[in-house]
Structure formats: C-alpha cells, structure tokens
Length: 109
Image 1 (cartoon, rainbow, N blue to C red):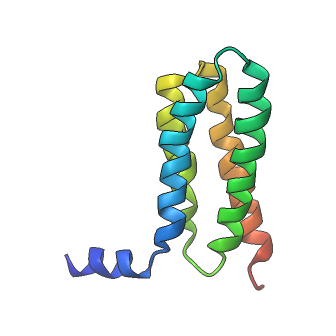
Image 2 (image 1 turned 135 degrees about the vertical axis):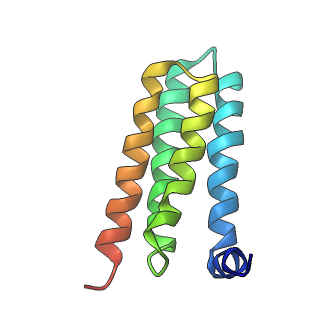
C-alpha cells in the first residue's frame, strides 16, 4: 500500500485527470454530439485536440516516468472502442507515438 501511495504522490495529477477526462468523457461526448458532421469529429477533435493533448502530455511529463504517457491513449482506446467506428482505433497508436516522441525528444540526453 505504501508503494501505491508513493507512486500516486509522485505522479502528475493534472495530467492524469486531463488525460482521463479527454480520453473517456471527451471522446464519448464528441462521438455523440458530432455524429451529423463526421469531418468535425475527425478533423476537430481526433486530430487537433487529441494530438495537441498528446504533445502537451509529452512535454509536461518530461521529468516523469514513461509509463504515465499511457493514460490518454488507453483512455481513448476504451472510449473509442465503445463509441466510435472501428477504424478510429488507429488513433490510439498515433496518440501514443506522438506523446512518446515529444517526451523522448524533450528529455535531456
């Protein structure tokens, strides 16, 4: 129990809350609200917001462990599997790749 408490205290709660909020709730809301305009869903939310959040998470978590980068892509994967067409699951790999590249390129060598 002490190990879990140490990990939680050392983690970035704002990044976790935003990642889970945008990944689970934001994706579900966008899928339900933007069904009439699929371009707004793809271009607006999945590309701009998702990749923007992935870049922000990669830069914010630069001094943290790499496993924290999985919060947003995994939350998106769960929500996309439930609410979006199956071809949108590829964004899981894109979000994970973008956040990892940002995290790796901004770290000190």
